[in-house]
Length: 405
Image (cartoon, rainbow, N blue to C red):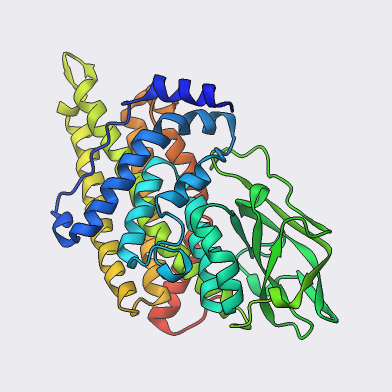
């Protein structure tokens, strides 16, 4: 899209985003001045630079590539990682707030940021060498580079231990073969953090760079969901990679699963943002739409829907706020993160469906964000651990019995 076409979009849609965040329990009182200031800054960016264009890109099923550097400039990439590597040095609650504001606009936009921060930058920080951290993190934080995360395979989704992507050693290099799919950011990624089995059958992380012979990233087409996000495959055909690109700090599935915990945490906050946007849209519509000589918000069934939405949003707000405190103190468990991800995506999807009904036929149009949120959330409820997988993670935590085997 040309700069003139972008400017035309901005002019036509400027000021249409009238979002106001619900805060029925005064949860803002629990946030610091710095957290509120950062939220205000990100919200202003979203209303000014993202909301006017996101529907257009979603309708075209096209990723707005120009936003990558913008997201870097507002600190949306790895805000929870140390400042010495060009990152934000912020706490996890602030990270969650940023993800909430981005997904309030669109789940695909938040996916771009959370994949970069939690699934690419975090493993390089947590498990990478000092040389790898210095080489990649500052460029990823600024948006100069875009990254993706390769774990899911065509035949291995919820069971990553069954992966077949593997490498063999060849002197100072390794030779990587295999494929990954459903990879956010893949078509435009400069680097990929890929999880593969070493010659001993143990899982290790490898940094693969675009341009390495045999490495390709075909785009996934015909999506009904996350249409403003880039999704693709990672294909490795005899890719020759320096051994120095192997993440030295972890061997085994602990590596990718640790990264998924960080990503799932961001999703719990993000999905809540989508829920709040649907609620706010439905509430405003109910006060403006007239039927039978009065606003539809005056009818009992519409009030019931709004009251139930607000109740679930309030519970979810308290859930992620407390989880943020646990993350900041290093006390959050994978099961606690699973509970928040599962609950908040579930309530967001239900709220989107109820809000769509309140808007009637208008709810399926691009004039309002609800149908886009609903379609996006159908992916969010599946990725980073499906709804049912998180249920079993909680079940195992409760009973001590493993239902996966």
